[in-house]
Image 1 (cartoon, chains in turn green, yellow, orange, cyan):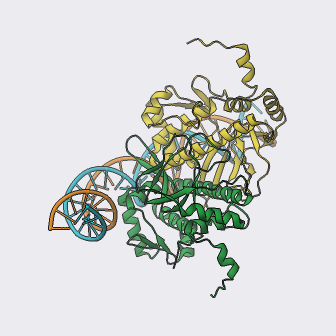
Image 2 (image 1 turned 180 degrees about the vertical axis):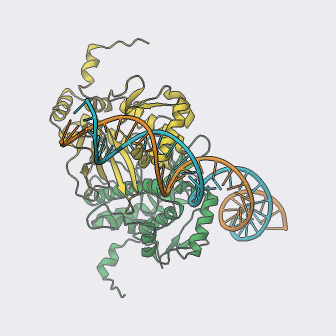
Image 3 (image 1 turned 90 degrees about the horizontal axis):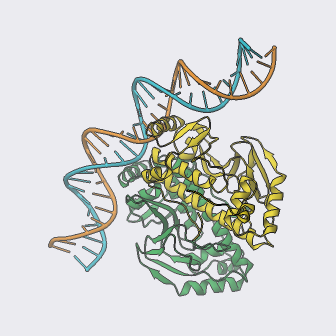
Length: 244
Length: 244
DNA sequence: CGCCTTGTTGAGCCCTTTCAAAGGATGTGG
DNA sequence: CCACATCCTTTGAAAGGGCTCAACAAGGCG
């Protein structure tokens, strides 16, 4: 299929994955886009494994993930660990309106992460809309995660998660050929999906053999996302009438 | 231990479980309290099993659960079912600020439920604060649910959930003698905790034998909540510096 | 090149599910 | 007040999915 790119559309797309994703969330004014691009241009770095937010700490100003992966996590005192959600380029950390006093979960960097303060939305309906939509998506993904953990078996959980990541990374432009970088160890994947790394390993092998996915060298490819979606019984996440 | 009740404190407590719970969430003005009490006095009824909100529908105005239990639920197309969260007296349904276009999950009545429109908070900082805190608690409980499903075994899940319900029903005044009404079938409990009703049954029996809980005739008693909390490794949920 | 993290594999066990059926409650109508 | 239907709880036996423990291979990285 051939797709024409109008000159106007290209200008809206954003120059980095994070801004591409944010631009897709709402109808932003030129000023909004400029301020997002500017903010993303001078990010801070959080190294792998470093805590970005600590559970129970007072909330700092909201931030945007410019690049890299982070996750919200909860630790049990016997050492068990559960990841609650992923934070991907263009996602917001700590955005609550109205503000909330305490962080509900620790946020930890899964890779080196670049983040920047989120431009103030109080004077911009476009930004406010984008942030709100982002937040709604966060909650939708969290609900999907509950269902995944509660009612899907190991293969379904893996497939469903990979499809979600595919879906979330697409607007940021981080997906090509149905594939994307997956900077997660099998241990981490286990702590996301409520399984052991050993079982993750075996199920990944099975799914590779069955042609559901290709995972090698930190890159994941879903040869046929639609087919996999049918196989694990997944439907697309939507929070408003129009958007993905 | 003897506790003195000052005449002033009593007036703040609210006359129904729902208002008691809401009054405990924020420092409310006399007008706030009056409007909540008034709203709760003319509720609508939703019968058991009836849908209160349908997933994907446009959001109606926010409502307050005056009495009864409801739950957010997601259905898989092969018939599997996962409850996402409970909605108890004093909880809000569909409160989002700023408003969100679509409901993210179906809400269904688990018992006959009385609900009323939530008084408008735009002119009242107290109400706004109460609603915000309620929403923060919702999210905290959702995160706890993820951890429960992902990393706890059957007994821990049951114990943890019962402790959460104990904690949530207490401010509404629905707990006495460490016990409360639990209007849930074992089937429902299974769909909350990601287990089968058969296994719920067996684990409940085990926990009864071990003295962790007493469940009979729809009433649950936790003989020693603190001990059970230690046993399942649970810590109390908090979203702000002061409150429960 | 050697350390350290990550991925792979095997065997056995245990927690949880499945399937089926019986027993108790509860409620409605006759 | 009994008969009957319905829903919920309880129980048994067997199978299965996922876990544990342990050891080994395979990559990065300094």
